[in-house]
Image 1 (cartoon, rainbow, N blue to C red):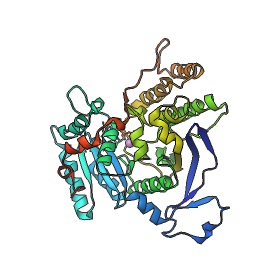
Image 2: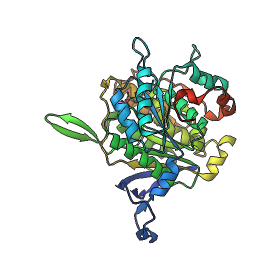
Image 3: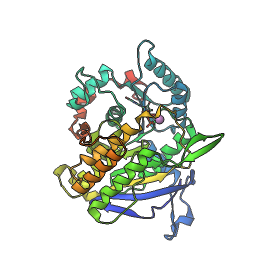
Image 4: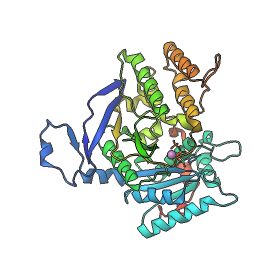
Length: 397
Ligand code: GDP
Ligand code: CO
């Protein structure tokens, strides 16, 4: 892959936020290119070998809930062979057992492709046992099962990836119409992660565009309402400390993102739609240098790198009802509002904006999100004893 170098970066304590990088060539060649021995170039060439080295240690977590099987199969087709797909499903099992259909589809596909995979149901007792035995009960509800929600599925996916010995995790939604764009996302993950010389790194995808039908043609929208607002406030969040206005953050709601396992295990998470925005807030809280904790020291010394990379493919996913836009804005802004780093000035700005949009009434305040502590609290050795991966796919065979 050939990537543009980030034009500038914004530092917040030990965290380096890099500006968006463009993809120049989806396939930049397998071996090193002589032309790149000159230091004065603006493109980074990441050889196929390097991508492969990361991808063989990369698990792609696919959270899914009642998506069309055809789309799920397409997503699998887009994942490079040597990555491990982990399908974390919260589909209904009654009256029709959709999860069983998913297992059959995935198993058939992977049998033909001779591909390794892992699949688990979010509400299964087997998955709950991993969290229970590992001493991470915060993920469980009052029935003793893993809580509902995409964020909770993502966290469970990280646990499974760690149990499978993976060094990186990436997230791809199951409702993507273009296997080619899934392929590009995974390549962007490995290319992005390969740039870091710290074990703590994250890559987030900025979609090239999201096509919409407009009259009798197509309109390629770049920014949604939610990301416009959360990016603006995340950038304000940085400027309140640096004193300089910035627009470095452009992926505040990126569902498609990847992390090194070291970072994924260190971070804490918030529930619901706020999880993506919370990544940024958590990086600033933990490694920004404002409050220093002993657990954060190794990462603070080695640095935490965040890369944002713009895909070439448009993003086309299954259109769901749009009613939750306001809920998403509410959740994204609440993690900022409730952060220990949020200044009174910014709190007032957030309240004013939310009341102006009619998301909050006068005298109402954003709800505090539910948080999950870092997965370092989970005892993976104990969890390992609590499951048999062979029952959930062929990855351990
Ligand atoms: P949007 O793309 O942000 O509008 O959100 P989607 O509704 O498409 O959800 C993103 C992905 O998460 C899709 O693959 C969903 O099937 C999946 N998803 C949604 N809710 C849940 C859940 O409770 N658990 C799991 N495991 N996946 C979910
Ligand atoms: Co979607």
